[in-house]
Image (cartoon, rainbow, N blue to C red; front, side, top):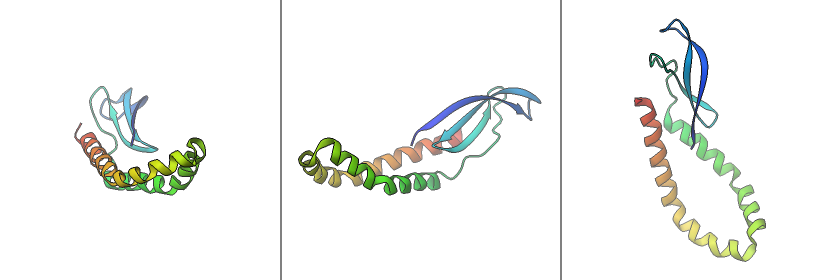
Length: 111
């Protein structure tokens, strides 16, 4: 999951004027808005577990199309040779990814 940071000019209630704010997105979900002048957070982040679950379900839903595209681009033989190894290692790779993303999203709460 990619966390993007954008800057925008918004009104800050604490500074009582327009200042630059950092907007942090995870996909299309706004995690938080922080004033760069005073550090006031204007919105609390969503539950990281919910966010990761949503991302994982979307990836599962789109997997058949992605596999079909890979089959067509790499050829049947290469695809058939690599799939068993990838299926064996996928649970471990998925676990590492979820663990890393939970740590990143939880860390974003503390900044």
